[in-house]
Length: 146
Image (cartoon, rainbow, N blue to C red; front, side, top):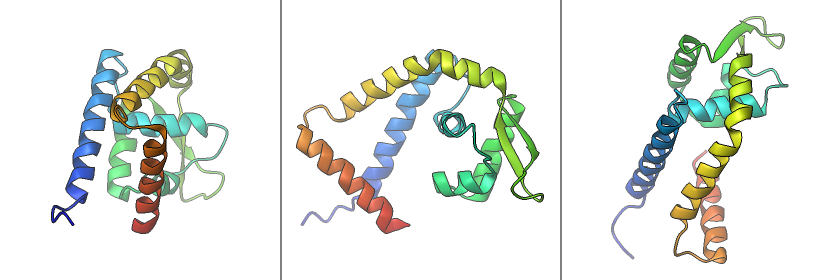
């Protein structure tokens, strides 16, 4: 068995993916980092639900201070607004601004195209079975680490 640890390779892969996504977001003048865009996409996909910070903590497996920072920057960019949550009066509901919803609808196909192209690059040289196995392995690793 190779003595080299695998976790640094996962970190490198994550960094490379984020850099590539950030590059595409800059080219589209989206004004968001890849992490911010992931949150915006989640909010867009769940815009008919009441989303609070703890939902983002759970979904992205990020610390509360990290999510706080992302939320703060998205509020500063006028991408989201915070309102009293109907689920819990102590919490704030996170709501996408209408402008962001419209922009996202307008550019969704471009973003999906970029994601498809990125995944094609990632999986170049792998056959369908290897890709399926890789995705299953990643899902198992995530489950094991929770």
